[in-house]
Length: 321
Ligand code: ASP
Image (cartoon, rainbow, N blue to C red; front, side, top):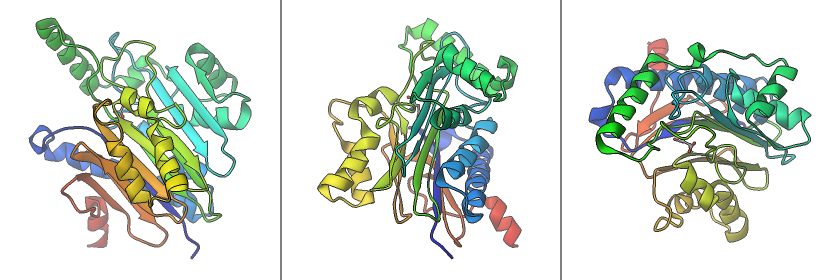
């Protein structure tokens, strides 16, 4: 069988085990397993890395457990707003969207930008009109805003009123990287941004080289965490640069990017990367990163906690019984 592989993340954040109940953990694991399967199925049929990362991210955008598409975090105004980017490592073509609303699958809009648009990044109403012109499905706020995220938003407003706390607490993001049978890499990232962010704030995810990057020469990368720090550190491109110019291995480059400029750029960081042999590296400083990986003809694995050895999702264990 020809070599191919996919890896995904559903965000990294600083949380304690006591803050996430078992039901939520299982929801995450199942969601990761579903997304991994969606991407793997594309690659197994000989599909492109670009289509595989889109399929994996679409799965998490549909799943309200993740902060992308349906179930995304709410801005200060209590609305959802999305950023997404996709990059083809073989052509260096890019499509990205910032601060879009109503688009059911922001990553698919980013892919249409990559395929049909002379520009790399479209934002706001222009991006929404581009989605309309290309017949992408749109949805109203009632589709995106889940009760859980509404409650989190209400809690935040109360907390702010009580403590005059600054906005911008962590949320998560989803992403995927893949290597296809033709040896091509791709990366995709999609997010609802930070809980309580300002309307119009755009994070690192659609910033090429910041939160998303792919180049067949070395690797594909998708980041999660404090977007302002990630884009100021240009972390996705740093992983590539450390491999290409310093000859670092994928894991070393990823680990170094997690530490880079940490004295000046504080905050949560999670980096998913894959090299052009299909090897994967997960780096994070949060203790918790929803993540998964599957290579050709191998069993899929998912994990949440740092201490956890990557393990098979419950659903798969049941199927094997
Ligand atoms: N990086 C995302 C952003 O800043 C959020 C996250 O990954 O948690 O928009």
